[in-house]
Length: 375
Image (cartoon, rainbow, N blue to C red):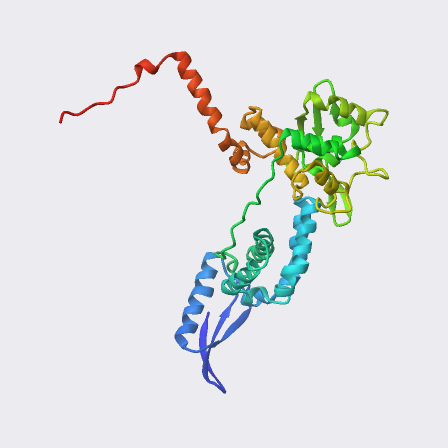
């Protein structure tokens, strides 16, 4: 049973909707300017919602956003890599919590969230903005599932488009000059630039992961920086893979493995253990000085060496499926999307191959002749 009653305030008459929740307890919603407003709210949010099973107690929306964060991040810890969880925790602490932690979940509106996203986009990368919104959206999704709010206020919020960073591809000559100038890290550089491993995958290799008979590297773990520590986890794809290395790496890898235990990291840190990733533009580190001596672009990153490997594979004639498997992409479509520019460059080669095929078939004499209309 629901009723609507009037009451007096200093600002004039207001209306109150009194109703029972599904559990039988009585509650009310106050502050309506018109009786009609109270009736419409009661019909939409109580009568229809109770009948459809979608009723949400307005009082439930008083939970603070910050109170819902621990359960959401705990869920992420179960399904995500430590490095990703660390990035989420940092984004919450720096960007999301200062604005939203103290707010009640039911008070959030799409318009103010859109305004927040727009303000961030003015000074932060699209990746950062999208991650920040993703955290708030995930918390609100949980609130919807727990019947704290009826709908997610983040739905419909527009985000900035990601701008793909211009990649640097080295030629084979540049790559080997860089390796030569990298001293004891030269083999490491060649593994990244010829095999297409991510840094963490390279750092996670053990001596026993090198199969010299089949020229394969077993990528079964990733040693990734999380804060100030190296954390060993599964590769980014969530599963291991076999990666081929060219014969030219046979001798350098044999030297790297010589006299060492199979369980040791293939490329250990100076004091032993897994190698920590360094900032590629740190002028106090070996990589920056190797780039300078080799005469390659100084903005080159370690991930650009992975891109270089992809470029060399495509140039050598490898098909997209082989490149996908080597790089550990989820699908060939993903490889084509990431490296569309490389396959576009190969269109001239496709044209030349087609021309050669058609010449062998001697089909030129069968070309249709143009029709000339009588004047």
